[in-house]
Image (tube, rainbow, N blue to C red; front, side, top):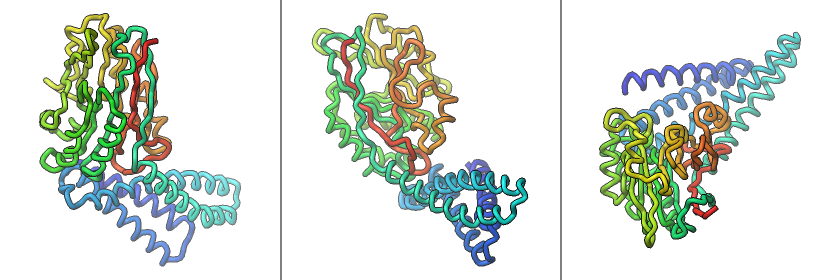
Length: 375
């Protein structure tokens, strides 16, 4: 962890230096203004470094969530300052190439404050957008769905990322939203936490109050493995009344009909926790309607041709901070909503929480509630 924090500190220092050059030096502000810019940027650097220490458990989140909030929010602000400065720098370069020094100075003097205001406004908007997830109704039709399961409601909750910033209060609000929908099944799609069991398990306690007559199921996400306590976390989830699907499946029955709920570990799992689609689907007849929970949408590539009728995923956050959505498209086949990966329909949630900055821009948090219909 110390080497990771050292690398983060160096990277953030480079970002801070660049922003100081563009925000303070390039517009040729008076010395007092340049010093003020340097102080603000240095405080932001220190706060963001402390936030990573909270995120990694070096600083116990209990009592330090405010510090993580400040530091991670600063990262979002710095990202939009960087984007704005890159645009402004391009315009300034154009005036320099056109031998228009007066125009260049005017662009920097006028444009720099505008970039700061725009970055502050975007971050404030993102804080509000990320604060409360909305319920997204989704209808999935399939001709193979048994008549007894027509109208089945499945709530998909992914990417809570509670611990460093969000506490049990956030989890409780999500649980209340889910219960208000009266789902038949709840699927927890991984990345529920960031941190150690001993430090942040209390933030997940409200999950014990989830209500679903056919069960609450969960699979691991990459952040459970990043914590290096994936098995401990999954054991803890089971104490909350959650059925953890570790490359296995469970049978759901209504009357004389049955469907299967399968789940696989995230691809970052290793050893006994490595993902294994064949194990997850073992003893499932090809004719059985099957729902697969897998943290990452691209896991559907393993499920191709194996009779999976619907995959439920998260992980992408819908990009979380614009324009990262377009980068996510390079790694995942579905960023959000319902799509198809081969012969597997994949419903990808943008997630209920947020990783790192408690900020979302053009990627609002959500809790999809899927209603199954016969097609």
